[in-house]
Structures are given as structure tokens and as C-alpha cells.
Amino acid sequence: MKAASARSPTHRVAIANSRLVTIENDQVAFRWKDYRHDDKVKVMALAADEFIRRFLLHTLPDAFHRIRHYGFLANGHRAAKLARCRRLLAAPTPQPVPPAADYREQYLRLTGRSLDVCPCCGGRMITLGATPPMRPPCQDTS
Image 1 (cartoon, rainbow, N blue to C red):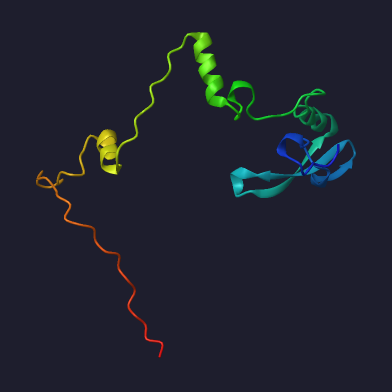
Image 2 (image 1 turned 30 degrees about the vertical axis):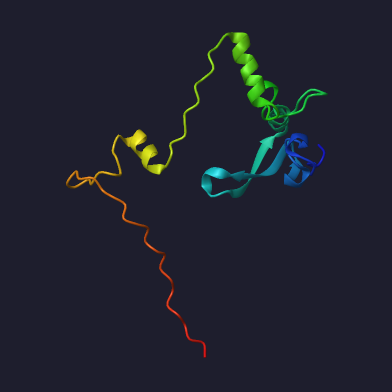
């Protein structure tokens, strides 16, 4: 096993040599991070054949690279590729959701309640003006 490359996540190996603790008596011990218990670092010992089996689950054949998104979901030109997929599948183009003009309209659309109506009496609320920000009291340094 070679050490992990610092180039990018696409060129890392399944386990770095620095995580291997011991290899003896047909057992391989290595460090791992337990994310369920506050990222505590623990040591696990496995039989050599089980360690190799698990390691090989993370290897790819020659000329393959582990990439999170590829093809039409890759970041470059994703919108154009998705549009072509829809056209080839004769799928309708989804209608874009028009952005709400401000937070009041969005709140009304999401909850069905208007922020312009008083929740107590049902009367119409009117904006009189913005409240100026509070300034800290002057501190005389003389």
C-alpha cells in the first residue's frame, strides 16, 4: 500500500500507511475514527484475510478514478447536459419557481399567514419606518 497522495481526494488510497499500527500473527491492527462517538480514534485488529477483503472493496481497476459525480451530473455544463437528457427522454422541463419579492411574500407562500396582518386582532399592520440601530454609549477617553 502506498501513502495517500496530497494531490486530491480522487487519488487517495483506501488506507494510509500511517494508520497501520501492527502486522503480526496473521492480524492487522489499524487506527480508525469513530464518528458516532465524538470522532474518537480507536484501534481495530482484523484477521489478515478480512483486512485484505475490506481493503480490496476500495480499490478500482486500472484506468478508473473514484469521482463523486461524473457524466451528466459532473459540475461542468451540468445544466446543458440535464436539458439534453430531458430532451432525449421527452421529459418536460420543470418550471422554475419564481423567487419571492421579499421575505414577507415568501413567508405567506410557505405558511399561508401574512406578516402584514396582526396575529391578535387581525388588523392591517403598516410600516412607519425603520428603527435606527442602537449605538454604544460614548466612552470618554480623556
